[in-house]
Length: 243
Image (tube, rainbow, N blue to C red; front, side):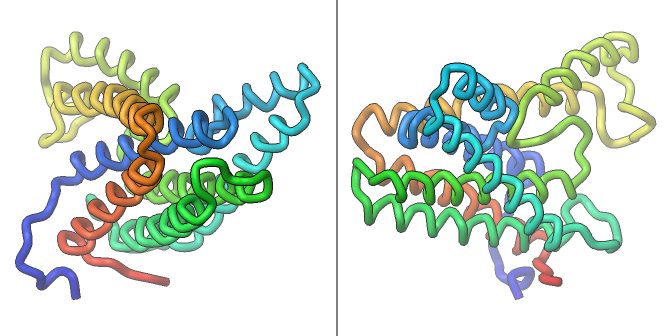
């Protein structure tokens, strides 16, 4: 039904960058507001888990474990929604369904965050960590279904690797279309990869700034708003399909 709405929609790359910003903001929110834990970037979270165990900080280790578990559940749910054999397109409609589910989980997070106020109790913190981890797992599975080479909105190691490999390829190809694609130039690929890195950092900066400025409600609602914008635009542009 969304396809018939007379509204401007966002390009695919712009939507990916908005999701990247949301992931960076979520990591800032969880690290600064939920006890030094990452809920989007599981590589960093795994390092924190190992360090916590080495230092005997069992409660900190538990927070990392909860984030990992929530992320795993989110990826599983996301895969059940988006991984179907459908006609390939720039943005399969199942991906939009995955993002709506992510928005629902983020809304639950916001509600629980607001209810508990600026100093949530231990059990509430654990529930908040699981919800944020689930939302980012859903996003990771949804973006993976798009199959954009080197692009993942919830972690950067692969993106940085692909970026600099592509910079080398760009120099060698002299700006010719990338990998036989007549529409995607090296400049566009390298630009998108670099933008993902910068936007993730800016998302973390924005989320941290909001928390430091004592605007926790805005900080928690901002990632939800970003995902809702993308989900609504994608629904209008590509449609939505639940399986």
